[in-house]
Length: 142
Image 1: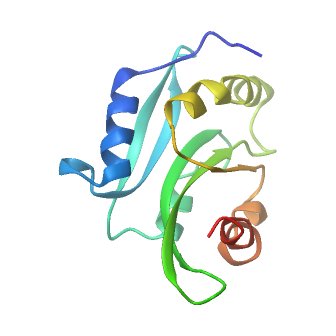
Image 2: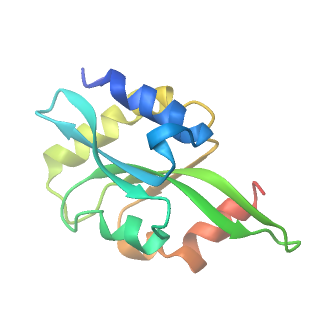
């Protein structure tokens, strides 16, 4: 479902620098929002010292967002590793219009975030729980 929402150019540039941890983009995460129902923009970014909990705290209770985080964890065999994880936050408590807009525009941002192999859709905070929901999925790719 195409919504006509486009991804701003700086989103692509910032992501490519973030992926390589270069320059001003030595960060932990980005949170993206749809501005004026027309374009996907960077809403917030987290410093490298930020945690997964900081990232989740940036997700509004009753509105949708996209996010990408460089998640550091220990693999099943005990190796420290990290993976880029894309999260589509579409809470059940959001109103119908934003939910439809974010759902229909997700492919546009995923196309720009090349190299991200882990995509997670979350509709409530239990689906964002690191230990019970996120790490089991992420460890499959470690």
